[in-house]
Amino acid sequence: MLGVFVNVAAVIIGGLVGLLVKKGIPKRFSGSIMTGVGLCTMYIGISGALQGENVIILVASIVLGVASGTALKIDERLDSLGEKLEARFASKGNSGEKASIAQGFVTGSLLFCVGAMAIVGSINSGLTGDHTMIYAKSTLDMIAAAMLAVTLGVGVIFSAASIFVYQGALVLLARLLSPLLEDPVLIAEMNCAGSIIIIALGLNLIGVTKIKVANFLPAIIFAPVITAILTSASSG
Image 1: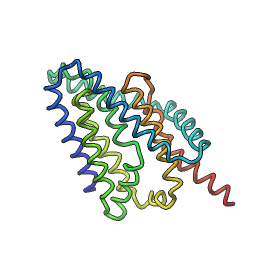
Image 2: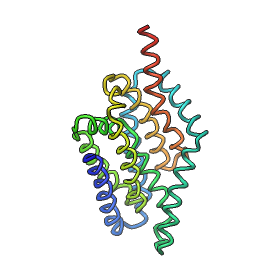
Image 3: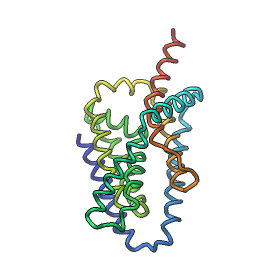
Image 4: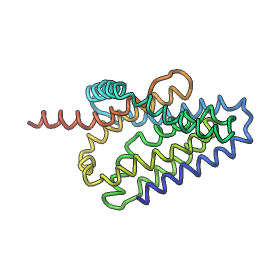
């Protein structure tokens, strides 16, 4: 779990730095900073999406994923958790920050937990004790947390809890999930689906859309499953 603890600490430190910097930035710059963060997020998503090799797998995983996510009300449940944090924080008298807590928590949770680095890095960490990828991810997450905290506030720091739960679970289940690492095509398609979700998150950040991004999360599970089925069918 060392890699997970480092990742959690990196997000908290990055978030705190962002909050400190935020105090010295005039409010009129917040919108421009948010747009910049959104564009960078979209770039990350586009870069990952290009790793996919089969459009059919992408379409099927996204459609099945969003259908499942909508049925399970994942976005609503994640928002509800963010709002509970917001209400708890506001009850302590910090009403000036409460407006962005839920958004910061949800946005940070999605950005830091979606992607191949979170999955493969955590499995490597739990299976072999190799934390290299998690350390690299932690560095990127620290920078991203600082930028997000400038515009979304303290809610970004709370997203560290999502990293602990999500990546911690992957580390503990590493042996069960290790077959994922044996097929580079499977990893590529899974990363492609996750990157499409990151693009949607970027579009939300720049204010172009209001996509319920969390409802798309099951697509990350469907992508490797569909890939494995098609591979098995073609080889058979």
